Length: 261
Image (cartoon, rainbow, N blue to C red; front, side, top):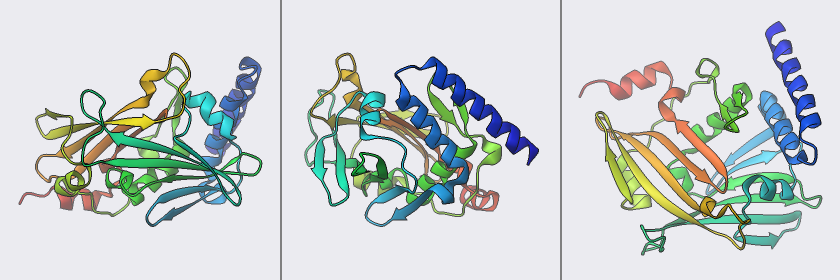
């Protein structure tokens, strides 16, 4: 309890310092406030998983303009809804010349905003769930509450000692490849294979100097022995995601999946 109070106090000091030093950069402050909400995940968020994976924000903080300020990218689609607006970022698989692959392989990330332009839901399409299964995606989000902040790299790194463990099956390589097709490149390692895919964001506008953010390289690592998905890393509309799936498996499940044939 005492450690938690000290931890929260340090975060408050950090927030006050951030407020004083980032004049005009209120989007960073609001992003940090969302990070603080992660400490009480069920109080501030809910999760739905069907055809899409959706993270719902019970107490919205971020504005639509914050995402443009943070990512420097604009959405592929901007559609009105009964509650406000829905932005959809489309990512299409491309070759070495950034030309779309045929047959088309694509997925989206969608942001829903209320009438005050505050973020109320963040969704990912079914194809994205082939490389980020719902149970693992949810527990990755929950782990942000105990994450360490790297101010220089502007990243959150979860503390392995605080991670929850789950019992779930990891996707096998044939199932993933059936969804994504052949990769742009394969890197062979001692015990793993890294499959690299390229996805180009369809966007109406990119702020000058940030054009390279439209091209997203997704790295998917498989265990050679089990053929299971082991890790995924990529950048999606300015959002960097890296998940080491084995860190979330409970010990019994991990041993069972790695036992000799």
